[in-house]
Length: 130
Image (cartoon, rainbow, N blue to C red; front, side, top):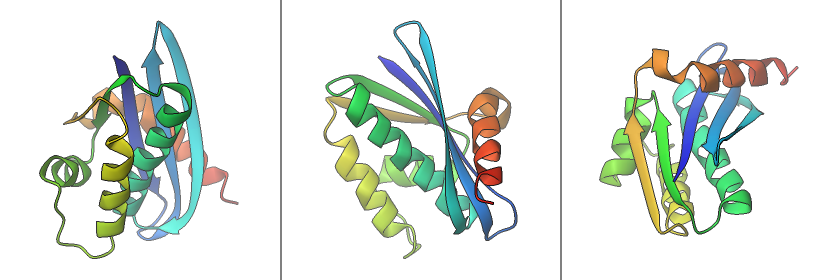
């Protein structure tokens, strides 16, 4: 099973944003920072999950994925397959489409303090927007 930690961050809301992805796989750690341009913090959280799924599609196809995020909004939307917010609907749909290419995809909410690695990577990515 591949453990994937994701986080999105924004400097301002909306503002320059970044996504952080921290992956534990086969005793190794992989870390990624993605500048996202200007968006809201919640949008950045959705984009972080999408970026992580892209990485997993390229490096861990066919694996069981266990995602962790400190965004209740994203975890609840993915778990229920529903969001009221029109801006998040295409992001949720994209997550579902990518997640369907794996035999099992789980997402779990974790407290901020358990997601510090992905948070640090997301904050680094904000600086890459400049």
